[in-house]
Length: 90
Ligand code: SF4
Ligand code: SF4
Image (cartoon, rainbow, N blue to C red; front, side, top):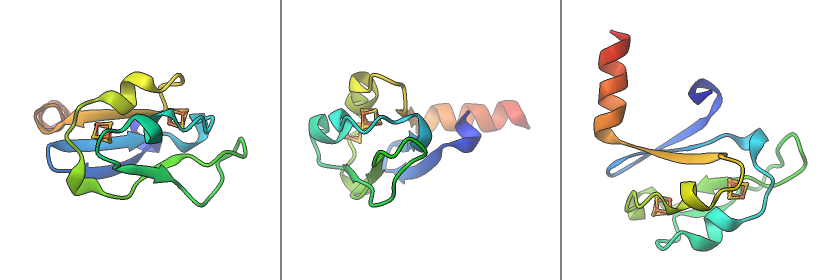
């Protein structure tokens, strides 16, 4: 699933979004304490605007966006976890 997701590099890891799972509720955008996310201009397959990362440097990797998403369309991975995965794949 991660392969299909959009990925943005942030200071402590990555933020992932699965556009076509998103139902455009805007919770992740609204509740992000650092205003990292915004509604993307393009529509997804369901006709909603998914979130996109507009200020990656501001991301505190708090995981709030992941917590409030009702559809598991957005999530974060800390740098260590990303490195672990790469190691496992090698
Ligand atoms: S992890 Fe926290 S700071 Fe980063 S995008 Fe999600 S809610 Fe915003
Ligand atoms: S919280 Fe989830 S479903 Fe709602 S806009 Fe964000 S990614 Fe989409």
